[in-house]
Length: 417
View (cartoon, rainbow, N blue to C red):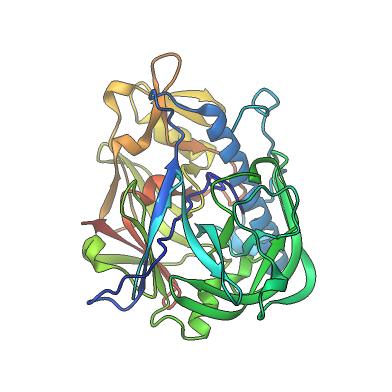
């Protein structure tokens, strides 16, 4: 799953150096951010959002195919299915499109990125950290069309070893990437592992070319790895490079951070409210969720995939229609996308049976439309997960501190400090 702005993606940007923390035992990674679905004049960039949506749909289509191969779709969810490849409509296809490290906001809530190092000596890359996929890939030095700022030269690394097989991703907007598979040393903010599987892509096309990030690091479970091997953080746990099998995210326009090997208690208040995973298929998926509008529960008892590689939020079309029926003045603009009155943006929140986590009106409102209404950040799309599974991306994560526990198979939320 790769998307410059998600794969709708949230890319996390790491700072160049690690900063010791007195009270916590993990590694803090500052993230940087750049880009938005809201134009500078406050209007909604529909074409950019559509391209991101297509990448989200096709990224998870690949994941569902891997789940079907591993355990069978019906064992994951009786109503799950593999949807056809999504494509950008022709009318929109040509639109331009223990220490810590910080994340960079690459496209105004669409992508956060950070720096990692691969090889010996290290070769640096700007990476999108994605909890909705499980593979690491970067451009190869032999890729003539990648237009990346940094590329991987296996011949320059004494620890690089080529493996059998090839890696390939493809999206409905025409974007593709493919290349050979290697193992090599990988370091993120000083958390170093050896023998990590990755792909150095020798071919890129479409929206993958020329973006602010070089590649992608998946942080979901090994079960949905297209490479068929442990993702980086699982390798770090196995090799005891981190003291705890937990990582945490704070996503914001400034001070964004990925924290490896625990959580950064300076960024949240109170305790983290953890929820056990509802599925072992490979996603960070938790159940017992309810959606609220202005304090009233409007949809309940569904499951949610928490995906840092998706900018917005999506639910099954019928459930999302029920959600918007509770908002005065809400209208379906196109199939699955909704507008709301700009002067009365509702208070939207989610709960998983504990605290209620509100989404800022500024995050739920993506900008003005031509008729004077505003675009809302929740869409109704059949992504193939089944009729009771929602996909919640950065729109939620920008409003909570989010912890992902491999040790306890759980996702947790805490109030931002």
